[in-house]
Length: 276
Length: 307
Image 1 (cartoon, chains in turn blue, red):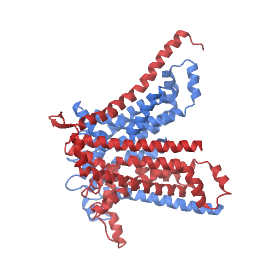
Image 2 (cartoon, one colour):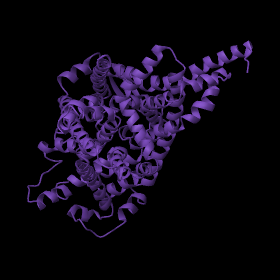
Image 3 (cartoon, chains in turn purple, orange):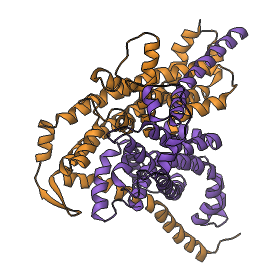
Image 4 (cartoon, chains in turn yellow, orange):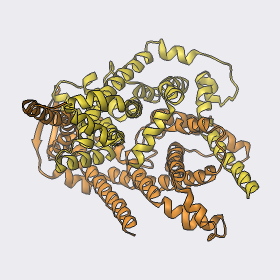
């Protein structure tokens, strides 16, 4: 029995590592292409002379300001994530522990769930009209507002889950000591849900950083985010494959940083958000 | 510490406002930016909108947009068909591959588990537009490495993205690559949280691995499987970014998806009224699916609890 288990264990490992290779293959290919000249890419040369020209072109040429695009992405993602965290954590404590009227919770969470699953693009047109009429089209404000509402439902669900895990007795004890809800929140809930906020924040940042549908239509030349810029490399009459690859590599950096330094938060957020 | 009555009243009042104030931001954001837009879409869908120097000129046209949407707009309906085919094929494959892998890995040793998790997280956390760019490089007709591999194996080369027969298949392949790791991580977590005692107890009754899988593992995993299946399928109606870079909806309408029609009509053709009608119809359709899925999942959960 023991031997059999270890044998199937090896098989399982082989399958998993095989799939890992299937994931890594395309990554390595795009990485290597980002260091090739356009002509080598189009000729399908596997081993080509190493060049940094793609990175130089996207960072420092007249057509492309990719560092600026990355900065725009960072501004929008960081601010919207912070706003989402504040709103979601405040609401989560109340929903999870302070028993608001049933119908309020039902409508709030019910609609948040439906809205979370609806295609983003069904709302972008309406946002576009609203923001244009308010004179906000193309501004950071418009992009951030759209990202906030987009990220809020998931953060709300995650934070409610995490606050639920804080023992009810702790809150009751603090209440008996004469604490107001505000004090309970500041001294108890906030410090205890920092781990949950890290998970919710990681997911919220990743989704804002990755967004394409919103930024494509709500940003302008000055506020264009990295994903939209990547798409423009493919839209010229001639597709700039090398630059597209280089820009893709740069825009993957936050995701790689999350995986290396915050893996458990990302995993926790993904799993908690999915099973709910 | 004793609380004086006057303090108690003050605390009570502060607490009331805290409850209102803590929920207000969430409610205001959702109301203004997600509920109001739906009403806005309803109003716009009954109108003909023209942009005159940055402000919208709106003419009421009744149900004309909807009439046109149901009688003309073949592209939108091609998109609906493609999106449904895409969702069913892609998610079914993801479930099969992801769950099978989770079953295989469950008994595997934990060596390299965190490295493996890191690799499996990659497709989930990188921007989807990058995935589009990546596969564009892999599937290109003349220079893509996939065709290079095919010709190395002396198989015929395929125009993955330009041939209407293969374009949608290519999009499905990319999506399977993208989301199978997610299903894997989810079902693996589900498998590992199952009660081991059940398996120990059943050891006498089941003859082999297959029976264990058929009569114990799968029934126990059914809730996770169902939820993942239903929600991944609905979420795949969001597909847009990868297709944008891979095929742009083409060739013809081979990979046209709902979001493409909405995006084109709204922004490239400036037909705000029709775009709103499409958005509204899509919201309605997907919302019905969400409510249905929720009801099924909930009912099954209740059945299990009473059974």
